[in-house]
Image 1 (cartoon, rainbow, N blue to C red):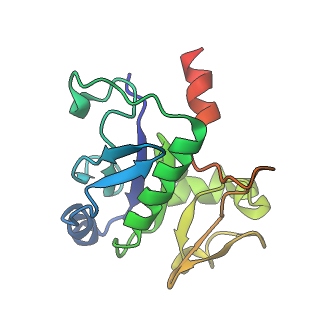
Image 2 (cartoon, rainbow, N blue to C red; image 1 turned 60 degrees about the vertical axis):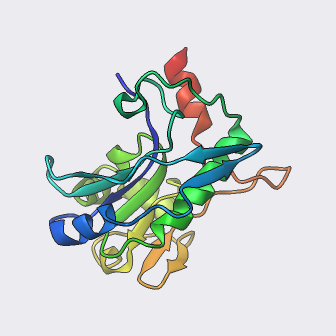
Amino acid sequence: MALCFELVADFGDDVEAARAAARVEPWPYTLPAGAFRIPLHRPMLSTDGPSAQVAVLPVAVGHGVAADGSLPRFELTEGELAELGRGLYTLLEHFEGYLAAMVGWDPEPFLDTNDLATDWAEELANGTLPGLVLADSLRTRLSLGPAWVPYRPGYSWLPYTQDASGAQDVSGAQDVQDVQE
């Protein structure tokens, strides 16, 4: 089973907006992660599930990712993953029309807006899903707590918190450690 560090944006039933996002040229083609410059796979469009989604995966960062083939993995620290994650959020700024988006290890379970309204309502209100970006049009349907702040016009997000060193964790690094054990 693959474990992907990625940016995923959910477009609901707006397949045309998802197609437009999938045509976005990732620029720059590489993102910094410490001393590394990590290339990006082209955005991948999926319309198989209940909604259209676009994913952007850094090359050779995940575990068992088919698109990476036999490339050796980058062994990134939490800080390097955080820097890479910030770069992916910058790429998200080029997408229009998405309902929910997130960077991290397999973030798809957090992006279904129906599940957010039912299964994740408490976390939305408490602000305990850091990194989640939501379209402001969902504010009336979802009960968002005071931790939500503007991300860009039309979108709000739960920012990552800084640790004592001032570093932001956008990596979800603990999640991958749990999976590997």
